[in-house]
Length: 388
Image 1 (tube, helix red, strand yellow):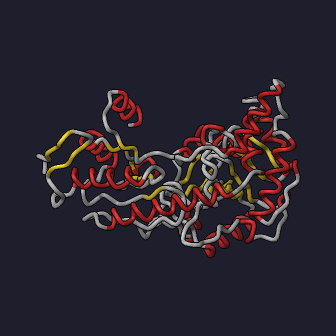
Image 2: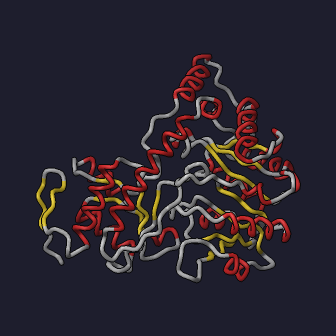
Image 3: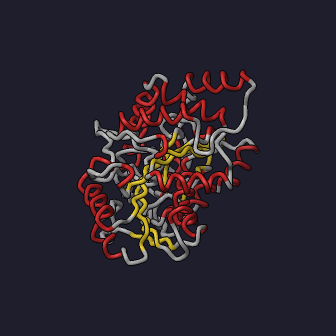
């Protein structure tokens, strides 16, 4: 889908990308200056496999401020993006045929990474047809082979922020049953409606080395630095030692220039995060207004991230075919819900401009809703609907 969209854009077609997974803001100036200063030294060599100490110290301060925990440097490993951090964790934890509980809707890479390390992804879909996970469904899926559970809140692709009650019950269950809880917190501060992000550490009295909680985070989403590819894991020291060995045999280390940029982002002025959050929250309000006025579409209001996962099954049951139709007819890129374990839905991103959001939804209405105007301008071209 993305390849076809790119081909159309190169031809000059007015494509609107509602599948985008990154904010539009510029990288923080302190990140740029810090990386430039490192580059200007000309001393660009290997770093320690688990990350440079000054970045680890910045992560320690960030963790203390946002998670109420003070990790030791040996509890931290810096990787080339949060995705590598998750892969390193799975490679470290899993033996062949070990099971990992994955809560639908889920980020597309979770099941594939589990399978790549010969584990078995066990998909748990809420039996009530909703988007919020339920402990009763998880308990039915847990078995003797369960090694870990992955939780991502705020959630990609739904935008839901899971309830404190659910997270508390999940943490207590994992600690009691010695099941690792992999917490993908890459969106943890992108929450709306004056809600405070609650760290999973709040629900356990155990220290990091004794806990089953593994926290994944990075600079991609909060700072709009997706291209810098720096993430980290906070875990018991014994696991970090193994993850460091895994990383040393794959990518060696993250680039020292990019680590310097990450350090600059974490230690610089943090108003950029709040500015981005407010922009995204406004965009959320815009897309909700448009979708709530869309006949036949059901949508759950997202409490964070920059995604929503509306149900378009009243128009088309097959989300892949629907996504292809919208790109062909309206030049709008969406992501099929099937990729996230939720058929009949589309993931829509509101990380772009307000104009892209409103025009994109208007084009989708024109394609699907017979009560919408029969004519629309796509770019400079007047289009007439002749298929409904």
